[in-house]
Amino acid sequence: MIDATLDRAVDPMTQPFRIETDSLGGIEVASEALWGAQTQRSLQNFAISDERIPLEIIQALAWIKRSCATVNGEHALLNPQQVELICTAADAIAAGQHNDQFPLRVWQTGSGTQTNMNINEVISNLASQASGTALGSHTPVHPNDHVNRSQSTNDVFPAAIHVAAAKHLKDGLLPALDALVRALDAKAQAWMPIVKIGRTHLQDAVPLRLGDEVGAWRDQLKQAQAWLEDCLVSLGDLPLGGTAVGTGLNTPPGFRHAVAEELSRVAGVSVRPADNLFAVMAGHDALVQAMGQLRLLAVAMLRIANDVRLLGCGPRAGLGELRLPANEPGSSIMPGKINPTQCEAMAMVCTQVIGLDGAVAAAGAGGHLQMNVYKPLIGFNLLQSIRMLKDAMTSFRQNLVEGLEPDREQIQRFVDRSLMLVTALTPSIGYEKASAIAQHAHHQGLTLKQAALELGHISEADFDQQVNTGAMAAPDA
Image (tube, rainbow, N blue to C red; front, side, top):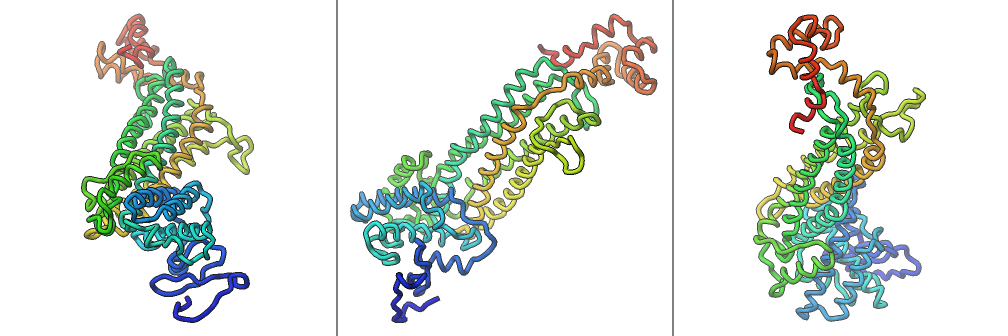
C-alpha cells in the first residue's frame, strides 16, 4: 500500500504499476489493469479460495449501470458524454469483452460492495481510455459520482442477482428442462404398449406400462418446471432504487420505475420495483425461494437418475430392463464394462445443489435489520446451481435419454415369472387363497397357473380370463 500523501511520480512507461487512489489513500495497481483502488484492496484483503463472482452477475451489473446512467441522464444528473461513455463501457462488459477485469472472490464483504466498485472502476477507466485521459484519473467519469449515481451496493448487488437468476432461468435452465421433458415424453409415448412388473419396496409388485413409469418422470419434471416459472415473477421484484436502506435517498423522482423499465428492455427480462423496498433489501426471500425450487428439481432429477441406473443394472446379473447407451469404457481393469456414468454425474450435481440450498437457506436467515450480508454467497450458489443443472440435464438428455432403449425380452421374462400377478385373483377367490397360490408357486418353483390349478382354487378358464397383464397394467383403458 502507498500513502497518497507521498509525492511520488510513477512513469507508466517504465513502471509495471500505476497509483490509484480512494478514500484510504493510494495503492499500486497493475498498469494494464482496468480496475482501481478498491478492487485492488479486495484482491489483497480477500485472497480466499478461488471462487470468483459469477460472470452472470457481472453482466447483470453492467445492464444495471447502463440503465441507471440512461435515467440519470434524463434527469440531467449526468451530461450526455458521460451517459454515452458509461453505456458504451457497460455494453462491452455485458458482452464479455472484459471478463478478465473482474477477479474478485465470492468471499468478500457480505454486501458485494467491492464487486460493485470493481465494475464502477472498470467503467470509469474504460471511459478514460475512450476519452484519452489517464487510467485512474476518474475523468471524465468518476466511479462513485457518475457510474454509481443514484445507487448503493445495497440495492444494486441484490438486484443484479435477481436479474442474473431470472435471465439464466428463462434463457438457460428452463429451455434445457423443457427439452428433457419432451425427450422423456417421446419415450413414454413410444413405450406405452410395453407391460412390465412394477416394484415397491424394491420387491415385485403388480404390472404397469413402461410408458407410465417414464411418464411419471416426465410429469415430475413438468411440475418442477411450473414451480420454477413461478419464481420468475418474484425474481422480477427488484430492490433497485432503494439505495442504502430502502428509502431511495439520493435518487431523482420516479427513478426506481424508470430504471426498471429501462432494465427490462436491456436485459430481456420483466422486472419492476418491489412493493416494499425495505423488505426485499432486508431479506432475500425471492432468492431463497428460487434456490429452494432448484433443490426440488435436483431432488426429482436424483430420483430419476437412480431409477434409470437401477433399471439398467446388469447386463446379465441385474434388472437389465433398460439398455443404457455405451458412451465410454467403464473400467480400467474389466474389459467391456459399461457404467451408468450420466446417472452418476447427474447424481453428483443434484447432491451438490441440495447442499448449496442449505447454505442459501442459512444465509437468507442471517440478515440483520436493514441488511443481509450473505449476498455474494447467495448469488454464487444460485447461479452455480442454475448452471450445473442446465448443463447436467442437457448432457443427461443427449447422452442417455435419447439413446435409452427397453430390453423387451428381459421385461417379458420378469412378467412371466412374477408372483404378484396373483393380485388379480383376489376379487374372485379372496386374499387368503390368492396368497396360498403365490406361496405354493414360490416354494415349489411353479408358475402361478400351475400352483392355482394344483390347489384347485380356480378353474383354468377363469385364471386365463382374470390374469391378463395388459388389463392389469391399464384397468381404465
